[in-house]
Amino acid sequence: MDAKKRFDEIAEEIKKVKIQGAGNIAKSALYAYSLIPTKESIKKLLSLRPTEPMLEKVLSLVGKKSYMEILSHFDSAQNGINRYVIKLIKNKDRIFTHCHSTNVVNALVFAKKSWAKFEVYNTETRPLFQGRRTADELRKAGIKVTMFVDSASAIAMEKENRKDKVYVNKVFLGADALLHNGIINKIGSGLISELAYSHKIPVYIIADSWKYSRKKVPIENRSLNEIWNRAPKDIRIKNPAFEFVPKKYITGIVTELGIMKYDKFVKKMRN
Ligand code: RI2
Image (cartoon, rainbow, N blue to C red; front, side, top):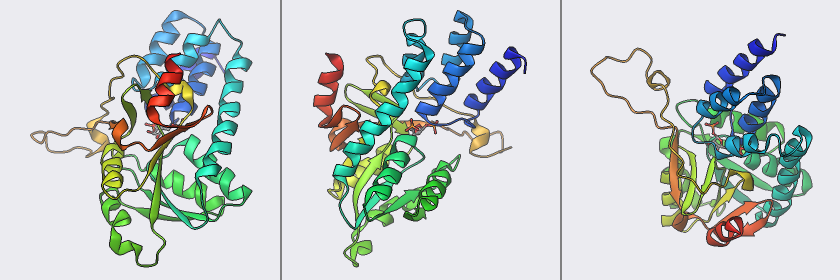
């Protein structure tokens, strides 16, 4: 296929969230860049999903490292993450997660394959229902999964649900951006983290350290049609795709560098 046509196809798939998740976006953008390696390509690729520092990180390495070197980071980081996440999982855990994160799903599948007996509660994640993908991938790996609508997150975590003594006792969230004062992840993540904090349920961020950014990262606002196609014109609709989670709600962060308190991670990244 013609390189320009393929480049445009990948760009469209990233824009429309057919290619989703910080890592997958960064890898696909790298491939698209390899087809047309120009400054304009970088500009175009960066504009597709503004809340993705990993995309920027990968494109900034082009020319300094080979494609193979850049790509090899993803697997080695995931392997590191898997090894640390398994240390956090105990028998009979009920782990709550939101949206779809490759880093989170891969770590859970690795834990299941290793030995761990746990189950997952997850959210469907409106408006694009990325939670369905999470539920499906976990199910295929033999993990018991129960899905809730986003607005039932409180019920999923509430005490009444704890009668069987097996209750949500950990929240694992992925991330799009790791900032000095907290993280950015899919819309709903702030609410879920605040809820978990109020129930004293630990929240762990599971993410590749290449998502770290020293810059101000904007929150992407997406098409209103994702919320309500052909809505009456006089109804205002907002569709922020992401949400900030302040570090006070984060018990720890798991990256390929280890399990750390959030401040320690930031300090390490700054050095
Ligand atoms: P990976 C996703 O963004 C979600 O917010 C998710 O938590 C994050 O990327 C995870 O990234 P989107 O592309 O762990 O679904 O997959 O908007 O790298």
